[in-house]
Length: 207
Image 1 (cartoon, rainbow, N blue to C red):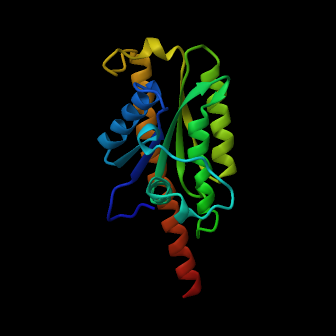
Image 2: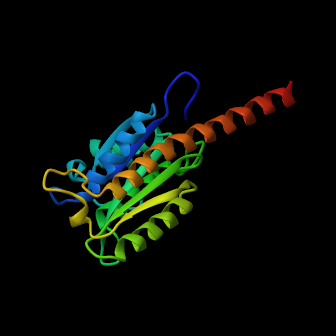
């Protein structure tokens, strides 16, 4: 988690197996906003990671470097931004598969995503699927004991929101993604401040 000696670290997970993923473009925009308010960021492009399928019971060391890197990145994050495409009314399978590897954090001192805030983005070609995908991601965040940011960005008809170079051309989308990136940094900082105050109280009580 954060401390007075370093900046909050925000890890973004997203993209699809298709080149030119609008979900990845949206994620990059949110992470840029997080950097602008002082956070360090790390982008995990699911197309580049090329993760294998999660297999319950298979040891972490048997998966290889891509999975180990994903788990360590999530473990070291103060905040996360997840961006998924919406396929057939819910989040993309490649996104769900990546999130299943958080099972390796089940026995951490703070299990899964405890004390981590997660900002959510979903892109869809139609008008409803992006909202459904966000709702599904909220359920995943809660199941993993994380804090879902009280702002999400469902991007409907995403083919209209981005140009061929990957730039966001919808100003409303730009503003919402920027607000999300800044918000997760703000919440992560507040969560850490509350944790530090609790630790100080415990020390005073023990003394």
